[in-house]
Length: 251
Length: 190
Length: 190
Image 1 (cartoon, rainbow over the protein chains, first blue to last red):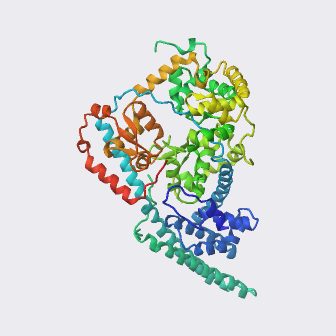
Image 2: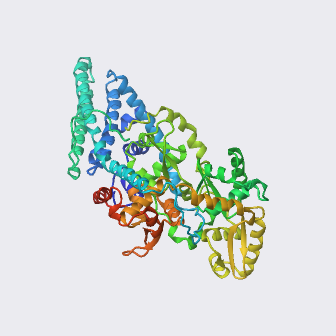
Image 3: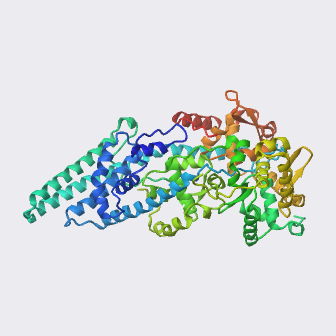
């Protein structure tokens, strides 16, 4: 399955070389759902949560800037699964809308994936070319805006944009912290809910406890996954700080 | 201008064709309006007529929201390849293709909208598509600081289609999209 | 082919039209026979059909004993003249100014280098600057297939530049470019 992804992934330029990785979290979720021949809904999502997390953890080489997105989706999937395991667990409005948004984004991504497949069949097959170049009749024709001042300010602006672009990856990584904190809160809440609900357990308690214990273990693993990604040595030069709160500004 | 275009024997669609041919590159509709001294409505009509007049010809008119260009017809590829072998295009990566699909089917998209749908950062894909001239950056109408990306004539030309509407399953894909788009929180990146 | 947009095969006259359009200059009949893989008689027939098919169009087929060429129709002369005047008199604009500045500050630049700094495809800007006699194409010393662009003597004289070092903020801009380049493996865009 991963190989099919790699095959298609011919990058322009030499900057990116990704092997055996999913382009993004949505693609992974959809493939897991497709494998079960299900469609996108809360039931199917709760069913693929374990597999998703396993895949994410098995991903040794995470592109740093995408790690946060993968973990973020994991957190929402866990919420959905928590809810299916512990019906008493009440989601906050924010969490509800997070779940809702994930569903909508997955459905939209599903369509984009179809579009992409359609385009991949025709891209570059029947290129319509422009009129052939005639030997140009060169006429020296400077313009009013051709001044040294305009030239230097144009270059100045272009270089400022270039520098801004180069700096972006560092800014993106900061979202990691928020997600890590979110995971902490989730573990805490589920654990609390569990102790409270223990009294209500009846005859089938043993089986349920097992489910929940493994689920908690799962949460722990995800948390570790997040930490791993953040400390990946390939990206040792990227600083991750605890201080950032706001979302990065992409300009 | 002293000479009026309209008094000449050629029809507006034919003049449009001649102008595009002579320019050899994509011309903005705004510039064509001035050159031919016609109204937007007249241009629209001329585009429709020229599209039809080129049916069965070796040339085709490519139209984006803002530009027009005359190109070879998609079915001429085999012969053209012998003449212009250097224009063989390299394949696009999956990330770029997804990003291009979003921009093409929607007509245009902001960085936030693309990231929202793809669930990953699309910066590298956008840069690569921009470098290859398949999309171009414009100012967002509502928020000038925000970049909006539009497909270029070259994007359509690489797909062998004359307009966005000719894209595969266009009507089907467009159908439910507007609904999702409205709901999407565009600015926030994941 | 499995996935083609419209599989309608083009006729020989249409293929002839596409070939002449893509070539941009006069092609010898001998060459066309080979490109289209047709007989002399078939070519003769195709020429006749294309002549007729272009009636009322903005293009015309010019035929000599040995060559064929696609040109704008004679009646379009006024519009074409207007287009050329407009091409040469309009402001350079941001894209061309940026491109010229990069070439000027670096002394010379390849297409890939210009695209990399600008982050966009610079084909149209290079074309326009060349037509206006502000830059000229030379061979790259290390790779002869690659074009390298230099400012023309006229451009330098017009701007009053004697040495590059005298350009405004020269050291600063060169420094930034070098620094950014070191940070990234320059993407060579053809």
